[in-house]
Length: 390
Image: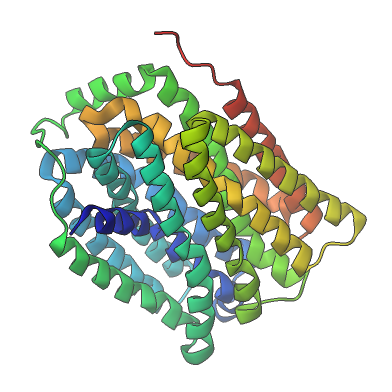
């Protein structure tokens, strides 16, 4: 595989969670009906996936430092495959949550190894630009997955949507077979408690990593809030489910592509952090307008979708640029650093969203207010960064 193919594949790996979640969004109301469960319980299939995908990253990264990127990635995809099978056959929401938790644990390997492989190959501003390109590839998930979920469900039912993830896992395993090993030297002590402690102390002693870990967590929370709330809002506020919802929701993926194209140029002309400040300002503006449309009673599927497209131009700028800022100082322990980053970001975001999504409910006003608060905090953190003088 050439470098462009590897970067593209890594972008798809980091999109594993987005694809696994977004593909189920058009059928959540069907899951509520068929499983006989309330909406909040079915919404938990999203947050439990993200929570487990966060926790498991602390294992996959150091394991890849010890055993290599390819075998660890293959093991994670195998576990994801098992979880996909359980989710497809789940008779109750409890079994569904268990299957999604297993999927998240295995999918964590795809997320952390996607970032780690890129850090093996690139550093500095080139790493930020490469992550921006990978994030543009990531945008294929929000665009394609809802459509795929809606089409598959209309033809074969909602369980076939989860079954499709079995096929995705098998395809990824085939690609891993051709993926070159990128780690320069394996660390036999990578999984020992002593090494864990030493590397953890090193990670958190780096001010840049600490600061942008917080920024990334808030950025992820904004994205997860949209994913968890959108199906309910489009259903209860706009009366849209299935393919109608998938069509509207998928459009925001084009905003991601546009944002990352601009981001790559801003990184060169202005720098990584100024690009994040601009992105944070756009996120605050978009969320404030969502809130305003709700308060004025003029919110509809078109206005909300348009503002989500505007929002989407920026939230992955925060995500990809924060990732570069956190990982760049830790080239010699890239797998471990990517693990800690993913654990804190995803668990932190999942906890934030789990706490606030009940208050957002199915109203545009509640959703807009919750999103605005998170985005203001994210922008404030990005704008307040002051690098150390060397």
